[in-house]
Length: 87
Image (cartoon, rainbow, N blue to C red):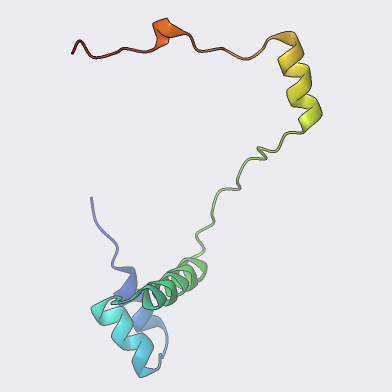
């Protein structure tokens, strides 16, 4: 697969201060630098027009859980679901 070098593309597309340029050329050496590099990556994705897929809504309410519990929608684990070593 043809790997895209997003760091080089970003360096060619805009002017950066020395700190950002060094970060793009040599990579992150600390946690804070990795956050900054991540922000630069997001900036590159916006420039290229890449969109993140929306996250699904996984919220549920306690009332929904109570209804599912009353209907027996949950699978209850038992001894047959586990394998024990033969020590």
